[in-house]
Every structure is written in structure tokens, then in C-alpha cells.
Image (tube, rainbow over all chains, first blue to last red):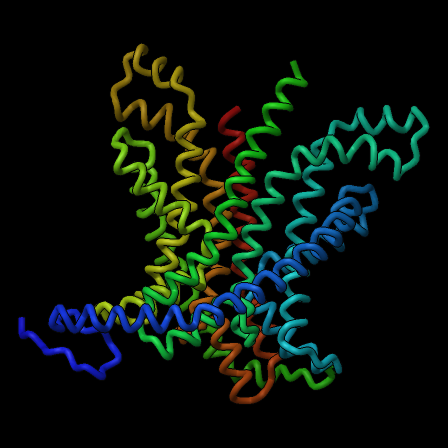
Length: 248
Length: 221
């Protein structure tokens, strides 16, 4: 193979460049990356803001929809079911584009940030709705009947009888879903929200070391998501232990 | 409101959408096959006896599961050329999809294998079945019943994830919507048509999932 010589001002790190030059370039790139670290942290803050806001609102809406979906009314069930199907069946990227580009046609002009929060909240509430309704339906019907015959009203039944038992089924997949949603929040960079993925994309134009730049971005996501994944699996273990003990 | 919604333009763009629809189909099919291969290998490494291999596999699985696909995609798209590996966009995209879904596939396959109790295998051995008979009549029918529905669920996720490939300028369904948006400034027509095509794939896969669940539970009982 013909060996090419590296050029000092070139932007690609030539694998055949002399070793000292390669070392020099790496040092240069890493230093540059260290300089733009505050920019990355700002992006991380934006990611946390988008996903935090949407997760809180999505959890509230998801719990409301989930209890409605587990109720007896057929029309409500069908409506929520159809909507969640539409949202689960289309990619999040397309949903974001729809919110960002089509809502203006209805006269709602949105900045990128609120558009991202609206789209992610909607996605979150659809997935959480499914989890919640599955959890409520997993509670044996005898419990509700017993609660009714003790004279608890609908809200008291939900608050003191159904939910404490359903939470055991809901909690582990809920935390898992949070991880998926935080990861999905990277897609909002496509409409120009300067989150940590976008920061990586902007930085890689200046520092042409994709592995280094996106390795850093990935590490930042890892720091958030990995503890949550571990929490989800430990919750799963703990909840199932409690459940089997109670059954005995 | 959408009183200007223009079906004629959609018809005009239909050839583009059709070709992009097939692009999405083949990209996700290639990603699915790749992810099955990756998943089988990773699962084999994960449950094997060698500590080194299982450690490597679990690092791979955990790091894929806790980073977004978009970041992985950019990692390969911008990263591979910088170490001198030049690949086409399509192969970069398929590589990212396969490696991403492979981690989830590995977990699904592991759950399927672990769902079969050792007693089943022992019973099969003591009734004199050889390896292939054991696989054919005892293990696979149960394992497929457990793994097929979540695998189809992963296929749904994979098709939706393939939308991200439009961000590295691959011509697929979302890209078709973007092209229509930028050429005619018709975001509603473009993106709603893409969404409709995705829904078509989603409902077919969902129907297959429901069918497999019904059919396989029937087989099990």
C-alpha cells in the first residue's frame, strides 16, 4: 500500500501520518474539545430541560389517560387507543416535524423549544398511558368490588386500593420508559434545539474527530441513562420479591 | 386551517414516496437481519462461560442501551471517516441500526432461552432425543413462542428508528416529506403522507404481533 504523508493543516487525522504528528493532532483536538466543554454542558442542560419538562407533564397526562383508558367507557377507550396507536406507529422525528411545521398552518407559531416539549410530552403521555392502564388492569377485579362494597367512592378506590397495588406493576417499566424518552429527546436537535446532540453536531464541524466528539456526547447521555436503567432493573427485582412474598 | 390541503401534489410526488417507502422497507429489513445476527452473537457471548467475552458483551449492551440511536448514528457517520474508514451513507445507517437493535435483540433472545427450564432439556435427553430433535421438538417451539412477539415489537421500533437515517441524508420516507417541504413548502402534505406510510407498516407489524401471540399461545397450551 502506498503511504501518504500527513499534512499539518489538514482536517482529517490521516492513519498513515507520522506518529509524532498524529500525537500532536490528538493533543490539539482534545485541547479544543476541553475548551468547548462549557458548550457541551449547556447542551446537557437543554437536554435535561426538554426531557425533564416533558417527562413531568407526560407523567401527569399519562396517568390521567391511563386511568381513563382502564375505565369502562367504550368511547373513551377507543379514542385514547386510536390516538396512542397513531403516536406509537409514527417515528418521533415525523411527529416533531408535524408539530414544528404544520401547527403554524393552524395559526400557532412555535419556537423550537416549546415545539420540542409539546411533541415529547405527547409521546411520553401515550407510552405512559399504556403502562398505567396495563398496571391498573393487572389488579384483580375482586379488589375493586371489595372497595365498592366497603363504600369507598371512585377516587378513594383509586387512591387507597387500586393505585398502591398497580404501582408495583407500573413503576419498573415507567422508569425504563423514562430512559427511552430521554434518549428520544436527542431527536429534537433536528429542529434546531441546541441540546447536547446538536452541540456535538456543531462541534464536529470544527473538530473533525467524530469518534472523540460523539464519544463525549454519548458519555454525557450514559451518565444520565445508565443509573436510571439500573434503577429500573433493581425496582423490577424488588417489586417482584414483594409480590411473591405477599402471595405466599 | 388546512383548507389548502392539496391531494394533487401528493399524487404528483407519489413516485418519490413509493421509492422512498421501499427504501425504508429494505433499510429496516437489512437492519433487522443484521440486528438478529448481532443479537445472537452478543447473547451467545453474554451467557457463555468466558468472563472476558461476557464482560465485553455486557459493556456493548449497556452502552448501546444508555445512549440514543441518533448519537450512535453520528458517531459512525462522522467518526468512521476520521479514522480512515469510508462507507456509504446506506451502509453506515444499516450498521448503526443493526448495532443498536442488536443489543435489544440480545436481551430478548436471552430472556427466551432463560424462560425454558432445565427440566425440559433433561426430560428430552432422558427420553432419548438427540440434539436436533431436542431443538426441533422441545426447545425451539417454546423459545420462539416467547421471543417472537417482542422481536416483532423490536421490528416496529426499528422501522420507526430508520426515520433518523434521513438526518444523514438517506432517501427514505421522512426524507421524502422533507424534500416535498423544501421544494413546494407543503409541510402538511409531505409529513402527513410520510406518517401515513409509516402507519401502514406499523399496523401490518402490529397485526402480525397479535397473530403470533394468539397462535403461539395456542401452540403452547
